[in-house]
Each structure stands twice: as structure tokens, then as C-alpha cells.
Amino acid sequence: MARSDHSESVVGGDEGPSSQPPVSVAALSWNLFHGRDHPPDPSLLTWRSRLTGRPTRGRTHEQVNRVLLDEFCAVLAREPWDLALLQEAPPRWLRPLCARTAAHGASALTSRNLGAALRGRLAEWNPDLIASNEGGSNQLLVRAPARIGEVRRLTLARRPERRRMLFARVELAGGGRLAVANLHATAGRPDAAAREIVKAAECAVGWAGDDPLVLGGDLNARQRKVPQLYDELRRRFGLEGPTAPGALDHLLARGLEPLEPARALEETRREVPGDAGLLIRLSDHAPVTARFSATSA
Image (cartoon, rainbow, N blue to C red; front, side):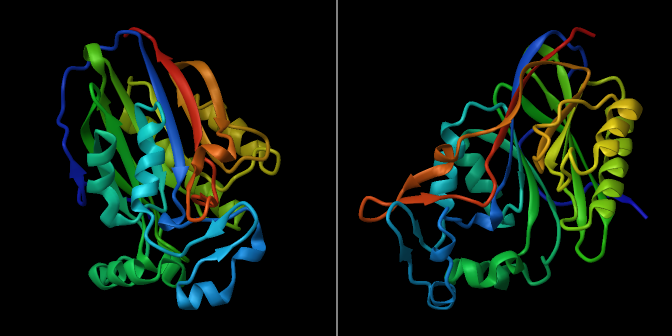
């Protein structure tokens, strides 16, 4: 059974007025891969590196197996978003991400967070060895002049991993308001992912009320594989705008005019300089961006 709660982290923000003048909103969704890198050359992903923590180097890229908070912060800081929906985010990263991107933030813990302090220390020691076992969260970052108001959380599934939706009402510049729902659906089980997404959409639409809504994240559902899911989201909930037929990451919207359709950013946009002139490619997912215009109430 789905369960909502109001616990966990919120950094900044409170509730404000409810009028809705037109406003442009840039959104970004990114699965952070638990703060790890993922080079384009799979031969660089070795057990030697994973066990010893030593980097492996190719012709153009390296795989570093070290803490990459600074690098993820740098990529997020340089992108022009108002809302950033993050999945597989290390829970301990919320405050530094907010500080370094000039944002308010909120989070919902997902799976493997028992013994968080120990898991965090192990992840600092060897990120690739502990991998997803460090624990995870969905996070929402909101840049000024917008700010986070009400925050809610919904448990979508408990097995095989806990899946949760983070919902927030965002106060926009000029007095407008927007609802945002961020989730990471089950991987490798399309039917389970579809059930979670529909449950999330139903709840998010109900919580949003008359406010426009962005529902996004790593949905683990390709439109070309489950077209009926996206038909249902459009028909029942008014949620439109999947990224591409083969995409897993989406920014769907209801009550918003699309100014720039959702698209995955070029691979180079998530690359940062490494050692010896080589590049580090962050995450195994590309960020997805879209821009919307809210209509007047």
C-alpha cells in the first residue's frame, strides 16, 4: 500500500501565495549513479579498479573510483535550471549540492539507508565497491527566486527495493506556484515500473490540485516499449512530453506550455577534466532538460 509522510530533509523554503502569473521554468532531471563516474569505454570498468580504488586510463577518458562531489556540483552549477530533479543521489550530498548551486533543496530517502553513517564512510573510502549499497535518495533542488514550500513523500513500493516519490510545491517569482514530483521507478520490471508511475501520477495530480505539475525522474520506462503507459498518463492525468521513444528519463508536464521539449544533453555536458589531460564522464545517465511556461490562473 502506498504511504505518504512528511519526514526527512528540507533545506530552506516555506509556503507562499497561490496566484499563477505566466513564468518560464527550466527543469533538469539527472540520475547521479550514486555519485560515480561511467566512462564510455567499458574496458575501463575493471575489478582491479573496483577492489583497489586505483584509476584506469584509456585514450580519452579515465575511470577514477573516488568521491566526485566537487565534479557533480560543478556540472550542476553551470547548467541553467530552475528545478533539478535528482535520483540515486547520495543522501549526504543534499546540503553541499544546495550550497554550491545556490539552491533550496528537499529529499526523500529510498533504499539501503539503514546504518547511513557507516555506509557513507565506506562510500567515501571506495565508491565503486559499495556502489548502490551506500544508500540513496531522490532530491529536488530549486534556485532562487523560486523556493520550496510544502513537501510530501509517498512510498510507491517496498520490494525488491523501496521506491518513493518526492513531491513539492514550489513558489515561483511573481507569486506563481508549481507542483513537482520526482521519482525513480523499478528497473528491469516494466510492469512494476508502470504501476509505480501511475500510482505516483495519481497521487501527484491529487496533491497538485489546480497547480501546474512537472512529474519527472528516471522512470525506467521507454515509450517505444510501453506506449500504453504514456497514453494513460496523457489521457487520465494530462501528463505529456516524454523525452524520446527510447529514453528512460523524462520530464512530463500538466498545465504547462512547452517552450523547449525534453531532451537528453550531449555526453560532453557531463564530462569534467581528469588527470593527464583525460576526461571523467559523470554518471551512466545523461541529464534531461526541458523548459515550460506556466499559464495564468
